[in-house]
Length: 250
Image 1 (cartoon, rainbow, N blue to C red):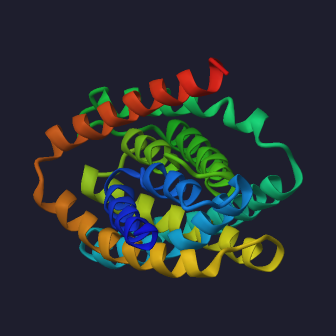
Image 2 (cartoon, rainbow, N blue to C red):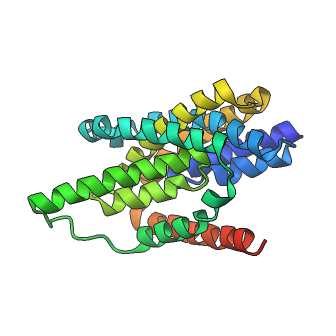
Image 3 (cartoon, one colour):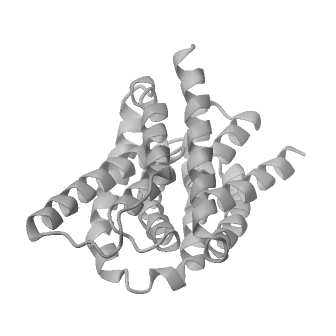
């Protein structure tokens, strides 16, 4: 029964992860219930979510058309961020970083809910360069967090991409899937070499993630963007409040 629940958590995590970046909210607690200690659960979760990245990118191919130049520019940033996050996890206590998660998630969720600027507005050259610099730095920091722990990193990335000019929720979601998939993959390589990974749990959870994540972009593609954006933002705010209570009341 534990294996069945782990597989179901993988499907749910893959679906929510490829839609809203909330995969770890389902998969990480499932690994704890499965009986793994926190560090082992965290690194096992990261390795299993490689399958989430594969499925979500395959499902996002239509929306990725035309984003090749941006992706090629930002992938090296994601690689560095994921590796830095994995190194942080293996060398520092988790408490200091995790204390910031409820605040970051709450801000990102509110940013998703706020109206975007009109698409016809254009940036001056100086403003464009500043926005590019801010976007690159923010992507790096989110990928560091993704490699370190990752719960709701997708909400942070989705909020960033929606605020920095991606054409639609579906296109921003596709870009998020690629960038966090890269960051997660490089962190998984580090953990495979240096950390305790429960491979049986990876296989079951990963299979569920692959199935769920393949379906997520299809849901985004065919759902009305406004209500879906509100649902993602509201879920993020609720999760931020829950994490805030758990983190600061202890």
